[in-house]
Amino acid sequence: MTTTDAILAERTPGGLGLITLNRPQALNALSLEMVRALTHTLRAWRHDAAVKAVALRGMGKAPEGFAPFGAFCAGGDIRFFHQAALAGDAALGDFFTEEYTLNHLIQTYGKPLIAFIDGIVMGGGMGLCQGPSAREAGGAGGLLRVATERTRMAMPETRIGLFPDVGGGYFLGRAPGRLGEYLALTGHVLTGAEAVAATLADGRVPSAQLPGLWAHLAGTAWDGGLAAQHWVAARFEAGGAGEIAHRDEIDRVFGLPTVGAIVAALEQADGAWAQGTAQALRTRSPLMLHVALEQVRRARGMALADELRMERGLVHQCFHLRPGPLSETVEGIRALAVDKDHAPRWQPARIKDVTPGMVAPFFDSPWPAHRHPLAAL
Image (cartoon, rainbow, N blue to C red):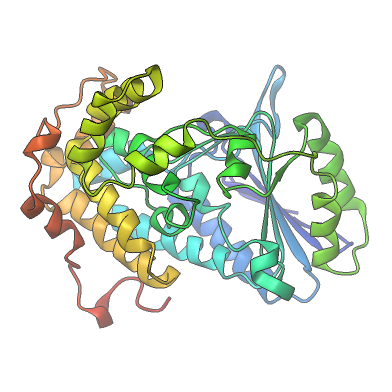
């Protein structure tokens, strides 16, 4: 077994690589150390013929302290983002470059992967568990995403003046209908069954079965990685795909051309869902609502590497177009996680005051193509 402060990594005699995210006190929020440890481990196992498949889980909280499962990954370490941005720390840029490189590695791994997405899976955690399904990947195995009744999945970045990154434009843009726009703008939290319906998970198992599934994976001599994946998938609950409420309304409203039109349509509609959704959007960063809508719609027609390169430029602009405390992202994190006053001072404060000229610079790459931090993807 390889142990660090960030992850636990073990190769089993039966041919599996097992990884446990090991920062439970922070709901396994990703630090730069964790990103580097994950990347190092996955790269080493990618070329190790003795590792036939890789399984990933998180360490969670338990009555006796900490125990596996119960939390997957709550996202990136936003307190670090805030501190690094105010200090002008170059490690902030390193974090996003290396995190997006890790996201690309997972999505293009070439060996079967199994992600047990129990509990919270948000933001950066989504980047660890999204990739081509077994069907899409063919013989390479792809990524099997195992949800439970405790899964709580979301891309809530507009709440902190950011956009759904870690490949969010790519995988949200490929969700059915206009779910991508809806999830990107609102940060709506999906249950495990809803995640299956949104094609962001492949199936569900009862959370009580997870320790037994993990133990069987660890203790079995597998003929190949696909056999391990198929064994887990055979344990999925029947009817694991749930219904996402208000799908017709979501597709109609979130297919409208602008954020202003979306909010106006919601406010003009009857019903608690429409009014509640409009009210929620009014609390998000108006500027980043516009950026996120443009991101998802551009990403829908982009290759993965190109989409991640676009996101790397976007996140740079989030911290540099208006540097330091003037950054919409720094202000959003301050309000949510630092001062915790939940009263962000968005600039501009109203959706109708955001102009195309404010949005367009986010999509201007700060680097020529050959010098892009992700040029090698």
